[in-house]
Image (cartoon, rainbow, N blue to C red):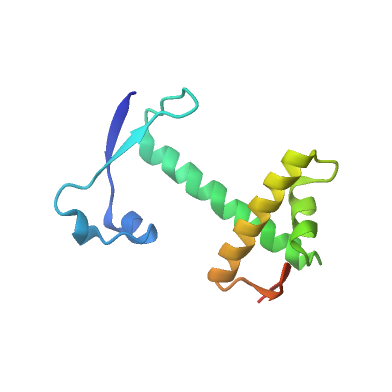
Length: 119
């Protein structure tokens, strides 16, 4: 398996909830290839992934603002209707994950089991 390393600035570590002082002077992260792709610029790829997740959170929040209330409604709004059983299970799991994250960020709250609202 190929390995690349990159230096991680303090502000990125704080964003990831890692105490930079715990890592000492050596601040390197091994990034392994996935899906048989090697990323020459691991820091740039990490930025792309962070942006993707921020966009996903925004899309879920927008679904709530558009009137979707249940996890199922949000999942349908984000991933569409007509999903197969496995796709629907994945969509619901992703919706739950993003809605819980929005709740922890103070951008949404669970008003009843499986029912959500923006804050």
